[in-house]
Image (cartoon, rainbow, N blue to C red; front, side, top):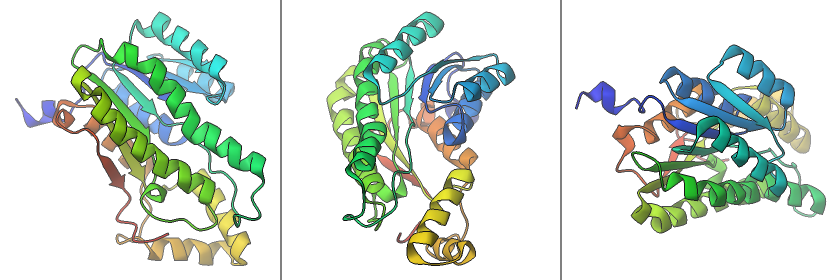
Amino acid sequence: MDALKLLTPRAGLRVLITGGASGIGLAIAKAFVSTGARVHVCDIDGKAIDTLASALPAVTGTRANVADAADVARVFEDVERELGGLDVLINNAGIAGPTGGIDEIDPADWEKTIDVNLNSHYQFARRAVPLLRHATDGGVMVFMSSVAGRLGYGFRTPYSATKWALVGLAKSLAIELGPDNIRVNAVQPGIVKGPRMEGVIAARAKQLGLSYEDMEARYLEKISLRRMVTQEEVAASVLFLSSPAGSAISGQALSVCGNVETL
């Protein structure tokens, strides 16, 4: 088969992306649409969904809190109505969580981070699997972890703990679902350029008593390529894992980070 065709997901794929109306999720949605996929997103920001749907008519959406089981159920009702099934689940939704020492983090903030970054991924996976078993060319599930899911991350323990957990979840489900021809992987973005990372840097700078510029320089010094990655680079890795070129890849955690050496 032609190499280019191997690298391109099949047109008509039915794709669900959580947290898909902004940031990395939006970049993934645009990438899939460019290949002819039918995309459904869910997001807590209803206005962002409306904006996306207006710009890309191939995208449908559901306003939902991914940490709410009733909302998750409603998302899948919409998916079955709009797409008639599912080939790819991109479990992307997540929040930065609090910044602070373990003795300073409010339990409510800890629990919210766990609910959004981990428990929601379980909720979507459990509902997606019965649909993915019927995917034409085998199902695909991708969990959006982080480089903080392979390195320790002081003062960001709730976030890091969830991202490590997602790698374990992906690797375990790859074993569990492989016989059903469902491939499961995790993607680990590094320091991704954009407003969310700017907020993280600002919070960490405040925690350590540094200027934003000094904190940003510290982050970049820890990356072998000395630059942040883009949302589009992360999206490209997701397309690869969902394409025929990735058909033998399962149970892996793929870092897209420019080689972050330490956090």
